[in-house]
Length: 274
Image (cartoon, rainbow, N blue to C red; front, side):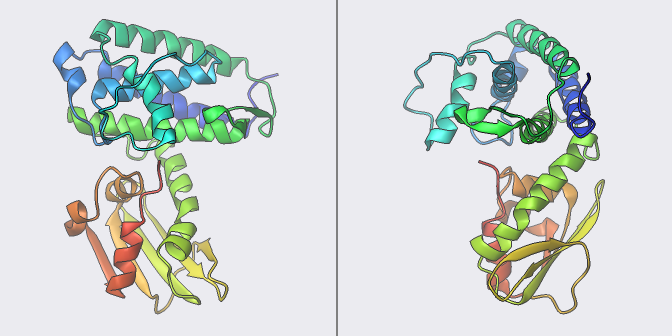
């Protein structure tokens, strides 16, 4: 047996992004590994350490036994502490150590994917020790490595792949979170519609309709007379949704219409990644 057809797009997207990450960091000199990325609190080395660490967990490797420093300002909850463990344990690794571990981890993961024959719904141990469906885990890894590829591209001044396979998976995952952002978190009025018009390498027009019970649903049809509307480019959309920029920092790239209080509330709750 081979990889289930449902899982193949996630494997392909992951491969595309992980290969891009390897290509980006392999020529870096020592000082470039310390460049700041848009991911809060993390350098280039930290982002690559995170990617390596989570891929090792996908392989079933034991998590490191390590005590985190107490002065990490960006670590404020247990979920962040979990993620930081794989990062902090590698903070003093040299450039050759980082690239060699990344290369070896990618080789092992590629072998694992080639031999993967389980059904998409198979429950396996995922992050935080939780039982997770294999399909969900593979989708999340494709999403995660694409976003971190973009973190590295921003830090290194090497833009690209904004329309790659991982970008399309990221779009779908971020859109799936949008009804909650609009209806529950931002408290959009009942029986209203909010429109998002996104242009650039990936283009889409989506409407969030809030029903009489306050529940939001995602639709591809436009809405007449929406309570609010947003027009922005794809790069700004994903960076806002992934917490890489604040609404204030990209105010000139987001055009809003409608109730100012509602548009401000939606932007305030727009970031959906941990």
